[in-house]
Image (cartoon, rainbow, N blue to C red):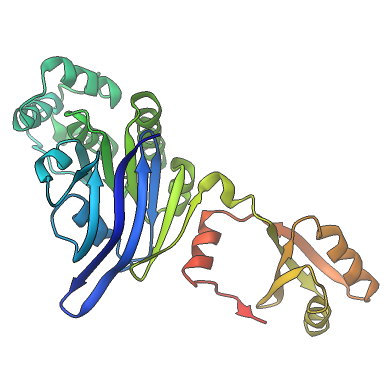
Length: 307
């Protein structure tokens, strides 16, 4: 697959403060790419550089092979963008809103408008005034505005913010279909980790202006290790025993429980050794690692006391 978006060693400073510290990644056609980080990590600054609102201090950004700084018009002509709750004319109908944006783009005909209405699933409500729309419908209409020029790259900044569960599912399905059926590259910045996990193919973790890791979401739960939560009669004795086990990678105490990171396939051996050492296991369970767990690890947000 060809790369639609490429960032190469991007730095950005405001005065003497370096916000972005040399990040590089690419988003391929037909791929949904997640961009995760805490507030202040550098997500918004990165997006503003991608769409040309601010210039990087150094490095290059390419969209469809065009340098955003040197070939701005050609680069952004293939970009659609939706930021949280998009602006629209509430006293106009959905179709009238799309017609206005179509004229602004200048190269969108009625056939394309009808195609977009079909894609966003508003065919039965498109001629109602927008002020009668639910938040989810407004969000879909905003997506429709971004899709009018047939963008190769779709940038979504907190796209499901404020949506109810049904609205989130509807929006997710539309975006997945765009990537699969229309080969659109989708770049998603969001703080809703569970949604990113279900939506994205790959995800980049940014922290303090640095990309800490880029991973396939399908692989996150398939690691070489697994976490086990233990509740035992004697925590101090258990921790001492765990420290002697070669397959134990880390031990964290969480109030009256112990969280153990062990090598895969040693779950039964863990139980056996603890039992032979005379430790009474009151409760034991595997902890499924999801995107939130991985994010907390990378961002250094574990709440457990490391042993």
